[in-house]
Image 1: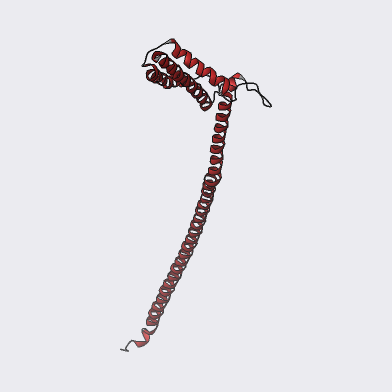
Image 2 (image 1 turned 30 degrees about the horizontal axis):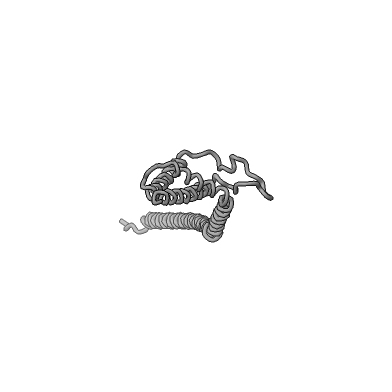
Amino acid sequence: MEWLDRQVLTVAVMFLTGVALGLFFDLWGVATGRVTAPPGPAVGRRVPSRRHATGGPVFPVSDLLLWLLVTPVVFVAALLANRGELRSFIFVGIALGVAAYAVLARRVFVWAALEVRAGLLSGVAAGLRWGERRVVQPVKAAGARGARAAERTVQGAAQAARRTARGAAQAARRTARAAAGAVRRTARGAAGAVRRTARGAARRLLGGFRRGPRNRPRG
């Protein structure tokens, strides 16, 4: 009886392990996008194609990772239930668990997992849209305003520089014209003074020649 009880317990544990494996396989398929619709006939909805339902090509790395996760679970379950002994009823229990899950609970579980996944994706999309409206667009608008303000500042600085350069050029031309006028006036004044000095000297010289014979003493 003890042996029979242990075998029944082992089959029960393996049965639950099979159910857990079925849940995990479907959860993995939903998470990786391979399962996009609940199994069974479609009521009021379009049945996706096989390529669309499986989410594209199969990725060997994903399959390898899946089996790396599943194998230790099965080994630990067998170790706890039957002390690590591999018997045929272990695989029978796993198969019965997977079959029971597929018949009784798979459709509901896949539907619920897809709804949760769709809700999470919708929440993420809504969060991204909110972030775009509240963060990205204001930052873009602020950057555009900053760029326009910087452009206006640069244009104003360039116009101010041009006005300053034009004012400096006009002031330099006025200064040069004033300096040239002063030089011309100074030159004309100096030429006039020279002419007046020369005329005065010539007059004095001519006056001396004219007065010379009259002032000579008589013999």
